[in-house]
Image (cartoon, rainbow, N blue to C red; front, side):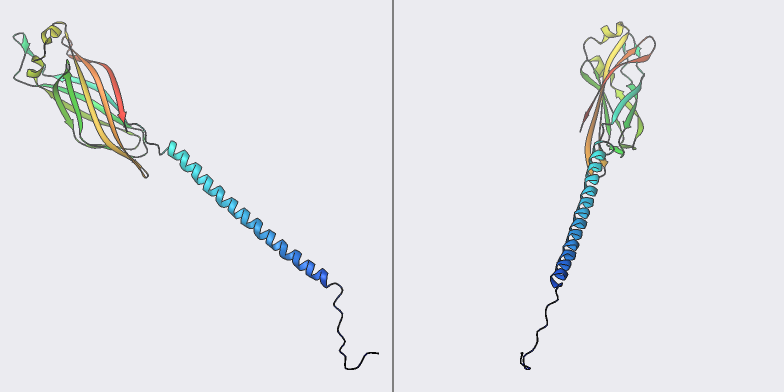
Length: 219
């Protein structure tokens, strides 16, 4: 028989280990849910960065890619190319007028400095003209009129002039140089556009027969 001074210890509930087991399962479930949310969040962030990167690359190679401006000589006319006593007049300069256009295919403006046009006869420079600086707007074409004064004395100093005059045509070459900049978003590029053309002046008709033109672009 138990002593009255002894304390009776209560028995532990029979289902205590089941309660602990349920709590551990709930805690484990919460951890798994947090891990899933973390993985899902990381996946979404990674997908967003991937989309941004792909979009930037595509735009960089398409819309924001710096394209070559195109220069074209549309028309050339010659004034005051006159003869007197069987030779070229030297009391007045010959004037060459050129209609030049610059096509800018970029999404940003093409700003260019003074354009230079040189005229050569048989490899000798006989005239020079300059055009003020300007801007070819985005995806637009800018046109400029170039005036070149040709010194008759320089042409007369080239051997074979009168023989070519007797043939009825005078062949000259022109060189046009335009330098500028194109800035697309954070990308800025210097652009140098060069155009070489062959022109033939017909003495009978007084018109220019424009030959081939070769364009070169340096970035």
